[in-house]
Amino acid sequence: MTVQQDAPGAGDTQDLEVWIDQDLCTGDGICVQYAPEVFELDIDGLAYVKSPEDELLQDKGATTPVPLPLLQDVVDSAKECPGDCIHVRRVSDSVEVFGPDAA
Image (tube, rainbow, N blue to C red; front, top):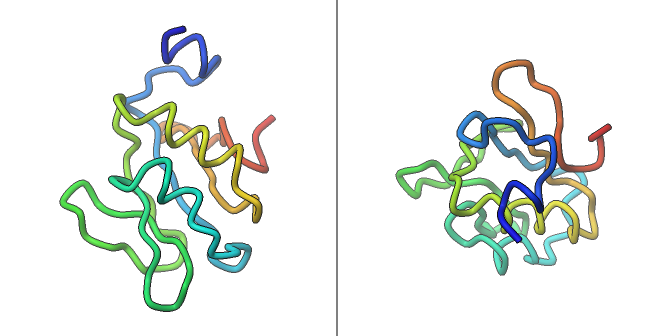
């Protein structure tokens, strides 16, 4: 299966971003196992997204682009997250396409 088949309705995947709601994060680290290039656990035990330059983004609601080669890993992270705290949305209109608030 291709990424597009696994991720229906994602549109142009270069226009997707991901963020984590740390208030709901359980610190299980499943996201880091799936996509360590995008997610990282910090010293507080919670997961955060990383910038394309590999910088940990600790501001509340910080977003990072979803790289096309990692789309399925990021989607799997959102699906498997026990805290339902990973949100993937379109940049163009901020509509969540994967995560707890996806239609």
